[in-house]
Image (cartoon, rainbow, N blue to C red; front, top):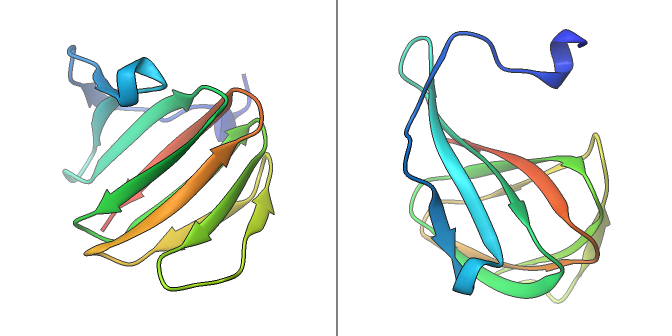
Length: 106
């Protein structure tokens, strides 16, 4: 497995985070140094997430359309791409197929 396909030396919370009636499921992980991330899947759906901290969403597999709060523009993202969302904001995401992601906080 290539190094880009994994995150080494992490602590994983056993309890999953389940949002929107199971349409989004993730696990929280802590990497060396204490940084928090979540790794999950969004099933095909259109959802709006609110952010507390800034987030960088890394798309691992699947395709989605994203509109950030206050924007009229919707952009499409796929594997290897990412988008950033400010803290205390929100974003609307439409998963066009099962969407695998890593969310980097802070």
